[in-house]
Amino acid sequence: MACCITSDPNRRQSRTIDKEIAQWMKEYKKTVKFLLLGAGESGKSTIIKQMRILHTGGFSDKEREEKIVDVKRNILEAIKELTGAMSRLKPPEQLADEDNKTSLDYVESISLIDDFDFPEEFYDHVIKLWSDPGVQRTSLRMNEFLPIDSAKYFLDQVHTIRKKDYMPSDQDILHCRRRTTEIQRIEFAVKIPKKYGGGYQSFWMFDVGGQRGERRKWIQVFDGITAILFLVASSGFDLKLREDPLVNRLQESLTLFQDVWNSRFLKESGFILFLNKQDQLKEKIERGSRIQDTFPEYLEYTPNDADASTEYEKVRSFIRDLFLDETKKQHQASSICSNDDYYNYRRSSKKRDCYWHYTTATDTNNIKRVFEDIHTMIVMLNLESIAPT
Image (cartoon, rainbow, N blue to C red; front, side, top):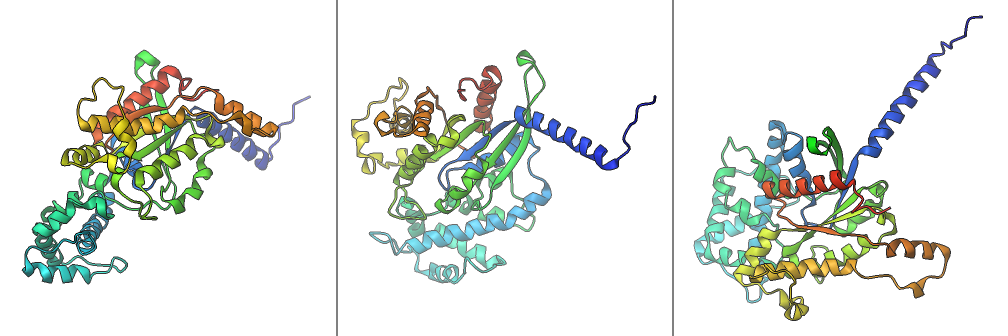
């Protein structure tokens, strides 16, 4: 008797969907999933941009054109923040050239809320103000107010950005600041060297907003995360939060790091610490900024690094150890009062490594080297050393 084969199209479609889901789950399990975490303005979005440049062909002409407005708004924000802070500083700064008062009035009249078409006179006024010694002195005191990191970078390039045929470069896009208000994801594949088996390794990288108001979204992407990339703005040791001008930025990062490191949702995830903005940290220390003014314990600090011969190298080692010391703390068993508490205590007591790198997120070569190190570690160790089971 002949075998009956169903011709029900719905059942055939269902089996096809089941196969597609099974294949997707197979690929999903093999994919390395990174979650970028850290306080606001630590460089998470810049890392996502670097992955695009390094692994997905970079930015199209259309995307570059769309960034022009953001770049110009960064110039507007930068000059308004600088000139607006002059009278609030203690002691205050003043324009060195009274003739620039017209330019100051012009900039102050522009609203950051409304759309602005950036006429030619705008650039003329910005150039005059940025050239004024009083504004330059204010730029050297940016730790006393809340400028955008890219202020100097873009104000130095106004002559180029004002041109009709201006097209943002990779560096312009990397420096361009725009607050992250939604979860971003990038997918890419990296070739595995033949000596490690060949083929390709798939990666997913998630970026979520770092401001306090955005952190409630983080738990939405915790499930199945392979490793946390936690970014710290190392140069923020003498800056305050935008959300709370009474809180030190580096201290906020340290508090947030403690919460993430101890999160029961992330105990099985690997942990990699990016001590970011090393270029800005080095510049600050060489200019005479003192970390001991905000972290007095630095005066008693002795680095273990044999190569920490300069003040900058000692400061970066101190900041690194502030975070690594948190990973060595153990929960107290006396606080255990239930089976769930005991289970979480046992998990948190397991040895867990925190890998770290000094980074400058806007430096493509630096990020390329760092990510190659991370990729090699994942391939060789299959995450056994950064994701204990």
